[in-house]
Image (cartoon, rainbow, N blue to C red; front, side, top):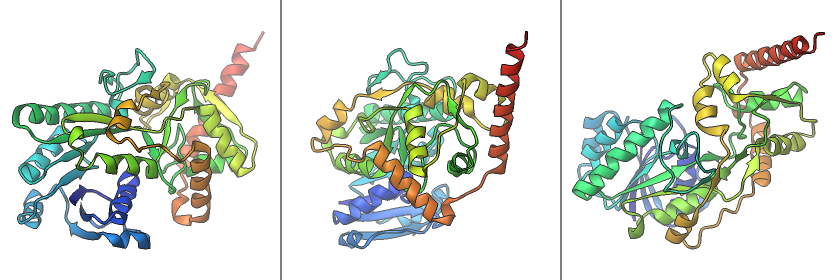
Length: 345
């Protein structure tokens, strides 16, 4: 198949790019060329063409694709309905399928039922990012109903790769600052009491499911979530990381609404109240009907250890974050002082 990706080098999309090329497909990537492609040798079965352009430069992109038609187009980096309107202007009539990567954070918050499937209502008052994703889905489904635009909506949850270790609370530079705190024996912030369930999905598993939706006639006009079937508590996730580091975990459990109120530049209201502080268990029955051979194969403890090994052996992944480190210290001090006050007689 001839497939075009808007993006193609991110956490989710890079794994799909590798998978499609290994299967022998013809793939085009529209991106600015800021991130180098690292493709293993087996990917040479297919062909890859980079169309270097900013997708927001609509005139430039229209010129690059003027002679091209596609079996599928996927946008991994659209966050607003306006960006999807641009995509429709560019690719309406040029593709047999348009795949929009939305987000499972769009699901109802707070949840009326922790078991989530595609029929779970979409409503997130805590996070503008999620509300924009919902609006984007609404726009595309209206196009499907009124004009037959062949859309497939995909909802990932917390998807990770080897370049980052997933945690619940981190700063602008990712999770490495949390790893450093663990190694130093410092307290690490865990939302709530750490007992809420969360789902981590390795990008290689996501890619296996996503490639099964491309060119799948039964996926047209549908929204499909792609996640692992495995659920862990945040306490378990942090303990796995600490065990892999060979250190004792020093957890500091902090109410998510407290973090949201004192986060300052950190949007913990969105990322915690609107996402990670909620217990989620995903029912992937629909995905497995559409892609019958799909099984998530990377167990969380295995994937976390592999990511940790990669980060610790690649200096480019080790981004220090003194601001977030100082924020964690302030929260720890505030909790300690509050405890002293409450224990005064």
